[in-house]
Amino acid sequence: MNSDIDKKNLILEKAKDMIITESYSSLSISKLTSELNISKGSFYTYFPSKDKMLGEILDEYIENITIFKNNLLENSKNIDECLDYYINSILNLTDDELKLELVITNLKRNYEVFNEENFRKLKIIACTMIDLVREVLSKYKKDISIEEKDIEKCSKMIFSIAEVFLIMENVDFDSDRFTFKTLDEVKKMYRSDDIKDHLEFIKKSIKKIIY
Image 1 (spheres, rainbow, N blue to C red):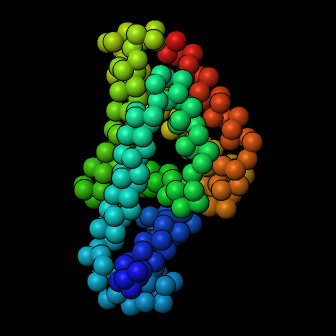
Image 2 (tube, rainbow, N blue to C red):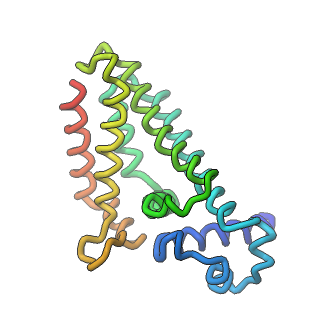
């Protein structure tokens, strides 16, 4: 692999680690380059600014969820299969995908420091998932009890249920302040039977809403 790509990816991965452990607002280019033992000039070779670096992380996540959305719609024949695909996808996230999920979760508490472009990307992330729910409900509207005029509201509500529930699973309630679990803790949780039970609970709750 090209050494420039290696170094760029190294910077991005270290930035993700520091966003998880310290938050995006606390992340400084000086500390990032010091941790990597590289010069600030090396950083600016790949990223004009901290915001541009964050933009690339958000772009990576947008690409991931767009692929997920397309695969779910293509590989599911009814709503139950859509829900099963969603749950299985979460249970089978790779370590790198889990890391990115935790990064995005952490970023959602720092959105007020985003520039306009990155805030727009954060909105794209939410809208992509809401659009997915809307497409599924519209596609199988004959199978559900939701009136067509309520599909938009129901899409946002279903998105919020799954989103907030999983965010709360990442919060460290044993801490004296609002912090998220470490990456190792999240990996352990997502490989446990508890998360399977929690996701099944989400699925049952969504079914009660739509059927």
